[in-house]
Image 1 (cartoon, rainbow, N blue to C red):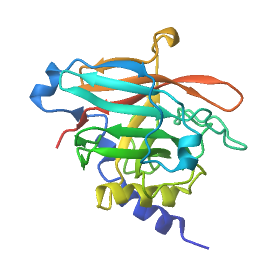
Image 2 (image 1 turned 90 degrees about the horizontal axis):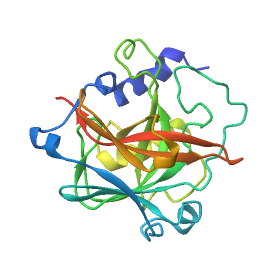
Image 3 (image 1 turned 45 degrees about the horizontal axis):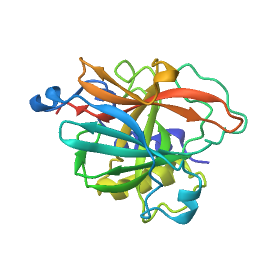
Image 4 (image 1 turned 180 degrees about the vertical axis):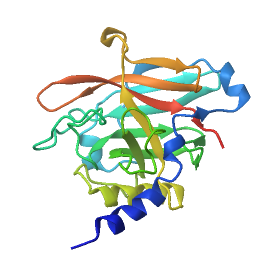
Length: 233
């Protein structure tokens, strides 16, 4: 049987710096940005495998700013609910098992992720993961532990859930480092009738895309994904 401390050690390395994530910041010119979100009739890109495209919505959520399109997001038509899931105050989306495919995203230009890591323009899958619950993150982590991790569209070809380690390994193929590429996911307080929409946080300075996650069984939960803004170096 594995020593639990040995099991968690690599996870701490992989998520090094995540304790600072909610002290996110952007370059000075970013504060002049004014993003908006719209729905556009656009099928999932051909870069994705047919199996992944089949479970995604037929329209995209598009985020645009003063420099043009920031990203297009395709959500899963119905997010699977984890068997035997129990509510946890530190987890906003406790119904979702780690490694679950949530959607896909396309960046027309190079971007920085929430850790400030450079991400090349292209199409990526989005899978759910949690920040580790350990002493290295206590006191500075966000109120919830929820994040989405990017995976390369050419290699992440199945809508089936991955294990936690498989999700981390897939995301490292995007960054080509020991760190996954992380994107903060939080509950949204936006009016459901106004979704999709954008919210801006002054301190830290971040923009979030607000949308509705549809779960199996037709339950709908508002969510917010930070699509612009990153940790201060």
